[in-house]
Image: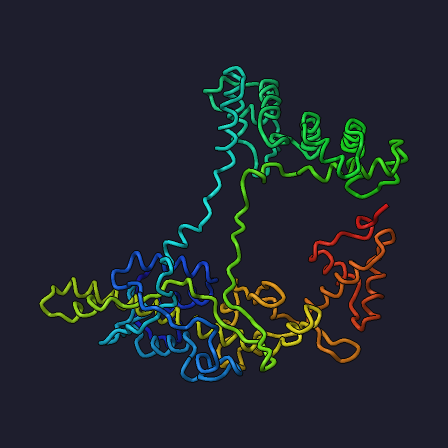
Amino acid sequence: MRFDTSQSMKLGQQMKLAPRMIQSMEILQMPLAELQERTEQELESNIALELDAQPDIRLDPPNEQDQPAREDGTADSRAEEDAFSRLDDYVHDNPDAADNDFSPPSYRDDYDTRPRSTRLDGEPDAKSEAMANTPARSEPLAEQLLRQWSLAEVDPRTHQLGAYLIEKLEDDGYLRTPLEEIAREAPRHLGSPTARDLERALVAMQFFLEPAGIGARDARECLLLQLDALEDDETWDEETDESGVDDKTRILHAARTLVEDHLDDLMNNRLPKIAEKSGLGLDKIKQALQLLRRLSLAPARRLVAEDNRPITPDAIIEYDQDNDRYIAYLNDRRLPNLQINREYALISRDRTVEKKDRDFIKTNLSNAQWLIDAVEQRRSTLLRVINVVLDAQRDYFDYGPQALKPLPMTLVAEQLGVHVATVSRAVSGKHLMTPRGVVPLRSFFSGGMQTDDGEDLSYDAIKAALKEVIDAEDKKKPLSDDALVKELKSRGIEIARRTVAKYRSQLGIPTARLRKNF
């Protein structure tokens, strides 16, 4: 075997992303709520950043002089260059910066200390207000149930096994793992419990834990546990009296019959078949269904709220009656207004300060300036994209979702002179407050087709038309997918049956059989 060494040259191109280029991309992609959280974190960690306490004298939406780009979406586009293009130029001219953990040494001798505040005198601090308005996180499901279980009047052995079973519950409150398997996996300190031991503990759990249905092993058991709880509910009589139900025991019996013996037919809306098999009349079945609709198939969801944070619109669209147009302005008043700390800027140029301290301050100053510039560039890019949307989707704002037109992101990117990825990041996770409600910015960008009349129609507009047809149908004779195809064709929209089925599924609309009312 022979070992030798040699040298060779290879010519190639390689693209590297500077850390601050990645940061700018992330900031552009952040919705307003995330950006606010990010700037708060940077304010805490970077000594060179501070809040600008200058009051903002602007009270109303920006006028034409404030936002010249609002008119056609292209004004001042040369001055507001794309952030990533500028970053690419920098990396090209400074190849070593791509591998540097710090920002490029591009900070200015006189750091930008222009007023950036949008908070008026007398208003509370945005940071403190945001913390005060943040809802408390809900306690984990297991902790809530263990607290309830600690108050249950059971023997110590049952209490021990019940606490173990609570740890096995899934997020919706079900215990889907077989008791035999749980018994085999039980730790030694539980003393090798049998499936029968766990069964007794589970029954006690189902009795003591609230809401009813916790600890059920399937949907049938979950509903039956809730029906059991309704028998002792003193407020149920009053509620059902108002809805026209006059016999609690009779309705509970009918609901229990549906769940125990006819759940599969019930889930498939086969009410005549249930009436034939059970001997219950359709009226009685409907009353029982009215009761069952009050029950939950995921009882634990009532204890642990889903992470549904309120949507904060990134921009607000208003109609200008005087000029017959829609205008946009950014909803970023609560965004912390950052500026460079002037004292640290002076210290960074003070030769009497030790070099390591000056380097540390310079790094923070550079990072701070990058952040401020990235936030400003986000404002500019987002507003320019929104203005293009206002021009292209004017019919949507006038007439509603059915007037939505196809708008590819590539077309918007070409119009703004930026990369399509920049447009994609700008619309990601953003929402607009419009005269028609709060809508995702991305919903304005979709493909489409031409109607028989030659009109461009987006896929979302087709879904809106489909939903309108289904909403207007006779629920005693709901339209099949084939009938929906014909109805849409009569409106000039020609799509295949499988496309109708796909759109109907995406809208969360069941099949005709499940939509039928008896």
